[in-house]
Length: 244
Image: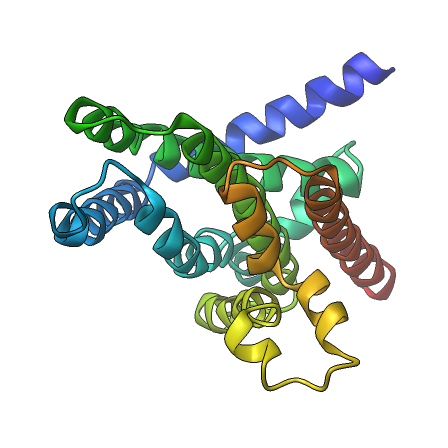
């Protein structure tokens, strides 16, 4: 039973992942991500004069802020517009299987982008003594942050048929959850709200992990965040099926 359940998710996941690479847009995304990342990093790397990737993990969440909604905007919106979502949901699969497959396909695409960026730490380590702890922490944090962005973007995509609207709303939602715990926001917030805002902020948890300190509370937060928005995605689909 479990084996068949997981096999169905794998088949759907493979379809979603291949869907990215069957389109030139995927290669454009990867090229923009790598070129922008390398340019932003090396534009001030030699001025700093230290073998560190700290600056890379400072702007990486902002790159993902645009990349994640661009990846997820089509996942439900395009299928709703073309009507293929109705056919998909009539197949002998559960809503959770479909949602998980779409999410895993999206996160796998992001992992490909991160794997291609590993040339950066190898290059930096060849130029100096690179501390691997923050590097590994930064990449682990990036994976969890991307997962949070993608789960949120996937939900937004299920609410509209228009990909542009899905992108804009996904970008706004990701931005809100990222900056709500940022220091420049917290200093303006009421003191009784600041601790809650810091806890809810995706960016504050990323900063902790990116320092190389893997705290269980940060990992639990990200997993809870991802599960919650995937659960909401399933609820939206179920409600639409009942109303159709």
